[in-house]
Image 1: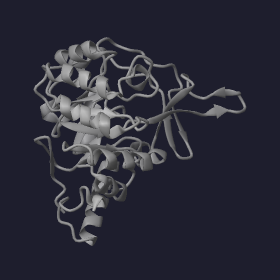
Image 2 (image 1 turned 60 degrees about the vertical axis):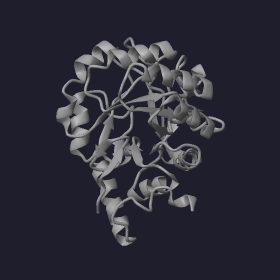
Image 3 (image 1 turned 120 degrees about the horizontal axis):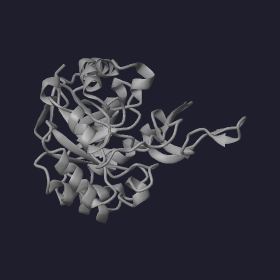
Image 4 (image 1 turned 45 degrees about the vertical axis):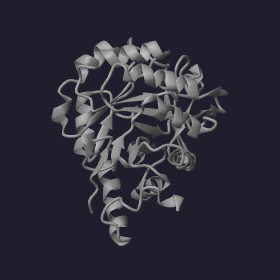
Length: 303
């Protein structure tokens, strides 16, 4: 089967992309993920200055997925410029992920990383557990989305992807605001929540920040619905993320409207070679159902 695709003019050997926040902390880890079959990789989000993030524990597995409150720990733009060098030599596109507390900070981060060999810039406006960022900073409104996207595209010629929150009311309106501001694609979705898990023996929430974003299988039905709604709202492509564990999950997300698939929590469940596994399972399903490419699959659920 032909799994090749193009995303905003970026050629991908397959549509399965490492989602931001999972493994993308170093050049060497990105290389390992690509070796294990990812069509593209996204780095962990970078802020203007280095951040320690929330105190441990920051991630916990539960019976329906994962919950995390990492708090955007990262080396800042100075550290990122040292770590993410020579990206063209990795053999697959690398997407930056940048964060800021306001449009001005987003602009500065985009400018600071401009000399690196990224293929696109993703801007998450949707983190549910870090004060000053994402939904806790009110960045998930159409107005703020438009403002931040405009600020970023002033400082880069790269495609800009906007990562949206699954808890956003009228997510199609936010997607349209991103598209109108000049975004090249929508990434949908970030983790949902925040949620909380309490250790009943300790009588305390488990996570250091008490609450965190929910990912994995529990998120998938919500993510599918969000992608479906966004597909009917915008013309730009969608990267569908949320609970994708298998090739069948990936096909389902594409039928909702995604052109590419983000994978994160599945690494925990199926290992780093999950990218190869999902691609193999997609190919098998496509062969059994008479598809030689993704034509006829993307958006098929819309009739």
